[in-house]
Image (cartoon, rainbow, N blue to C red):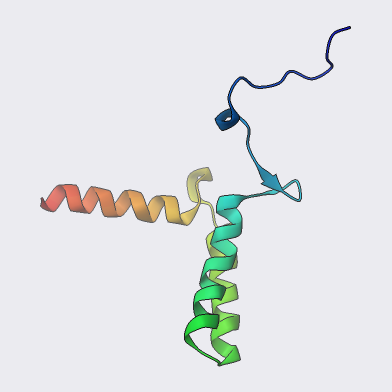
Length: 83
């Protein structure tokens, strides 16, 4: 009897997704601004702004890559240019 599903050889090959859609990086993009605002302030307006920032970091994907990917690449490019 053959198994119906092929199992990967290493755990690194398996992509972990929450609720069938979010990866751990997506959850971090959504939650990190809100958690930072919750720790630093009590004002609700900052929590709302942080939630909007997290949604923007998740939703806006130029060239099929998230914004934080482009930000990290641009920092590396500029640092390499000036060093």
